[in-house]
Image 1: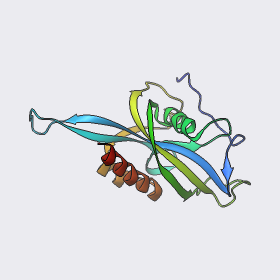
Image 2 (image 1 turned 60 degrees about the horizontal axis):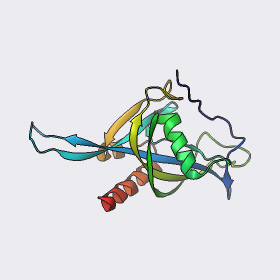
Image 3 (image 1 turned 60 degrees about the vertical axis):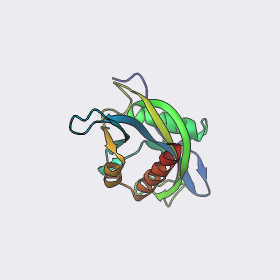
Image 4 (image 1 turned 180 degrees about the vertical axis):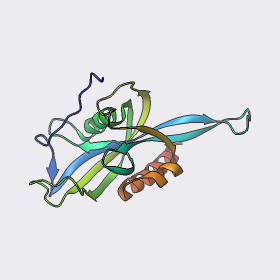
Length: 169
């Protein structure tokens, strides 16, 4: 059982212009890849995705950005709560708008959301984390992740992340 506890509820939720504000990240790492026992290995980028308890496809950790935290703090918190990873929050990747099919409320009756997404270089995978009973972690190459994204907006964020990473290397 995890000593960490996931935040729940909407009392502290941020809204702007009729949109629920969320924050998330694309967790990533570098893995050495060696083909056919070749002594020369190359660095392969892998991203961490999690399952959704409500349906097929994979997601990046994200969730409500609350009044007592910055978007960066919310993204780091969601990585811990949903994916059980810690690391260095790198750069802002972009804002992505989407419509939630399940999360409408009086502040956002149309279910419109705006997600601030960041790159998170993973340094630690926790053995236990708040949502481990409902979440499974999967490390994927970027092409595998593109094929696995449940939502089109996450696929676009992943493509922007890939461009960001190319610029950094």
